[in-house]
Image (tube, rainbow, N blue to C red; front, side, top):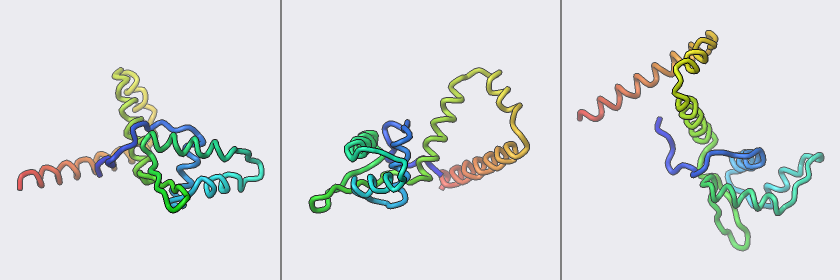
Length: 141
């Protein structure tokens, strides 16, 4: 599976940005009021309506959301699914980890893996082999 396109320009997210994205993934599209009401459904939360608007605009600028006008209301919708976001963020973490480029750090990490992690890595390795074989088979036709 390839990384999604288009990709957000900035992958880093703050806690409120993540929370609002989660709401939008659930609702698929929502107004500021709908998102604000969802957050304030928790009686222990306080958050200004303007703060939700600010975060929505920031997420739009980062490339996570699109804004559409329906009549007088603006509706925000995610441009990336939850699964695609997880894939992109895992990809970024892996690249950051590998950029350390210190074999001792990578070896220490690998040495600390438990059996379940090793089985997961074996499954990933098998998927990579299958994907590469498929790509090689397609390029020859």
